[in-house]
Image (cartoon, rainbow, N blue to C red; front, side):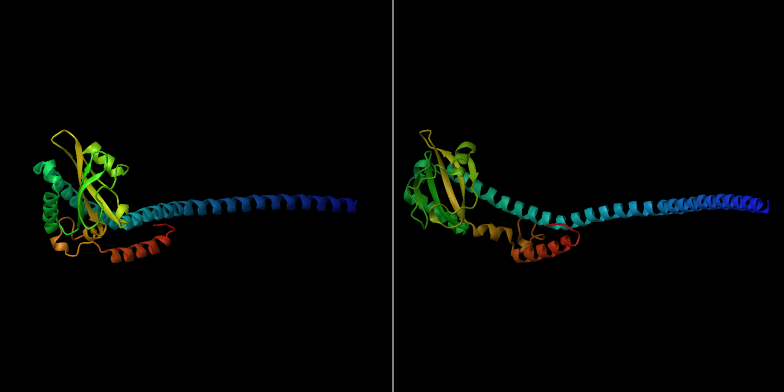
Amino acid sequence: MDLQQTRKKAAEWWVVETEADRSLFRYRRLWISIVISTCLVSLIPLVVMAVINYTQYREAFQEEVEQPVFMLASSARRSLQFYIDERVAVLDFIIRDIPYEELCDQGRLSQVYRDLKANQQDIVDIGVIDDAGHQEYYVGPYDLRGKAYGEQEWFGEALLNGRAVSGVFLGHRKSPHFAIAVRGISSDGHAYLLRETLDAAVLVSHLEQPDPERAMSDGVQSLKFEKFQHLMNEIRAVAASINRVV
């Protein structure tokens, strides 16, 4: 009997201890849940704010890096466009003022070339091209009279639109240059082009302003190419630090 009572008490003690452990486990689990919830409530806003701040900083930094480059490129484009528009206007004035028959006179065309050269040193040569693309008359340092330009993209554009500016190419002279052509109409109704070519170095001279105070357009924002290269190296170094490529 004593043995049975002892076993019964032992069983009762075991059951009480087991329930206490389970109760303690439930409280511990509740405590852990409260701690985790508190941490999440505290940390999630911080993480969200950190992500938002990083995104805003990256966008602001990208805009700050790109803005000077954009302004320089825009300034250079306007400066070059102003120069090209001026050259087109000069050629347009010539074909309106001088008849086609006079431009076909080698002496008269030479005089036009000398007048242009006196006011614009970067002109290389000038020529009259018929509607088939053959350069009938030419004044300049190269032997280009009779050369064919009918397959050139700028030739078709000039005949169609009345004017054209080529990209920089080598052409028959095998040296970098670009051409400006304006369409005229002869007395017998045939189209022709008056074309002048400019040395490619003129692109550099008009993008790189040596005297900003006297510049015709955006002189204060002008930047020499060696300084531009240095600026781009600095921008690339900074951009690499935020995993950006420029």
